[in-house]
Image (tube, helix red, strand yellow):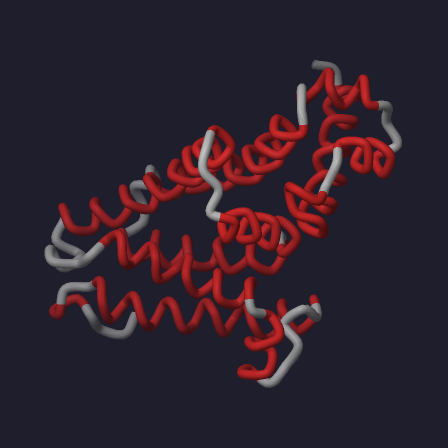
Length: 216
């Protein structure tokens, strides 16, 4: 695919991500997306086939790019397992701030609790990243750095759940934290470092073997 086609496809995906985040899958239409992207329906259908195909493509682009980062992190032999968890938390917090539109779209869809082919495709995409985090945690257990009795699934749920609550309840979270989490500047300057510091301290205490659980 030549560069012009790649750029056009990415532009459509950018517009689709915004429209889906604003209107949800059910409320959005391919006609609205094609109109806002400045392309005709034939081009949109050529690239993605259907609204479902476009929706899955938006998810796949974001999740796969993060999966590649996770795979590189997991295979880095110069880092300890805890170093990798710390880096993962930093990467994750960065995506909460810089991909807020996608995060909103993601959790709107998850809250719908759909069943069927679309839900299966989304779950399959998301589970690829869960598996990469699982590998990092398992490596830490295998090399003795992490406690053998940790609950890996609950660790992952804790990380995802923190973000889920913040993104899905912005009004409540803003009132609780004392600042508007929908303000991009405040997200970057106040919320992101707070998420990082909290998750690092929490997970370090839980994951590391007692003899390794010292300040570093």
